[in-house]
Amino acid sequence: MAICNLDLPTQVTGLSLGSPEQLAGELAITVANALRDAIDTRGSAVLVVSGGRSPVAFFECLSGQALDWSKVTVSLADERFVPVSHPDSNEGLVRRHLLRGAAAGAQFLGLYHSAPGLDESAHMADAALGELGAIDVLVLGMGEDGHTASLFPSSPNLELALSADCPQRCLPMLAPSVPRQRLTLTLPLLASAHLTLLAVQGQAKLATLADALAGEDATAMPIRAFLRRPLEIHWCP
Image (cartoon, rainbow, N blue to C red; front, side, top):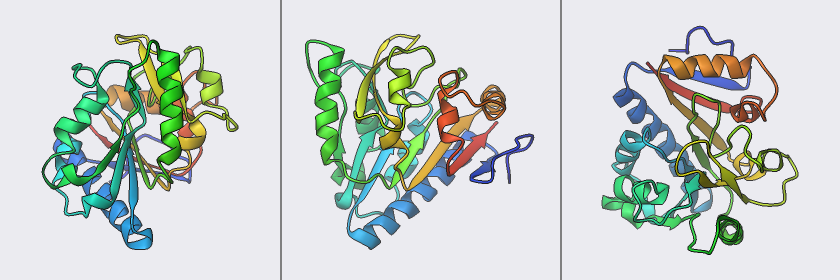
């Protein structure tokens, strides 16, 4: 069922699910099918996911999908500048909830690197991402301020990160909430994904989407950078 009350651009599709459990299951099936197609086509697949609290159920559903996980590389759209053992680590979240069972056979390319500071860690991540290859599936989330990945309004590097000719694959970013220091993939790499999915829950985020669709300034609401290109939105109340 289409998302009600949203006037979506022609290149954006929306699917309304009845519950978070249904959203997680439908999203997992969609991602798994796309990864299988990539493996069938060229022998490997790349999946880039987002962190935070919302994706846990999706990760657990996806980990149970029948895939040749040894041919899948998983990476992150963004990361917090904390060690993997820290409870706020997105890598830690993915390792606990996605890379388990058969899915533990997937390769993982993380963004966090132990370094004296955020800038050095971002530089190391940027170099490592040169090995990532083409992104087959990108799964994004969105905050009520319109941020996605760790592309936050007012972050010092936001304009560069959103520029179509940004030379870096990864940049340091600052979030309004703790942990403030973040690492994020930049728009040229994120926008190169063959399939981009946006998972959102709740009426408040539906209202955020409506606000984002009503304007053009991506620096005010970075999710707008993805609403003007092919995108599949999965939403539930």
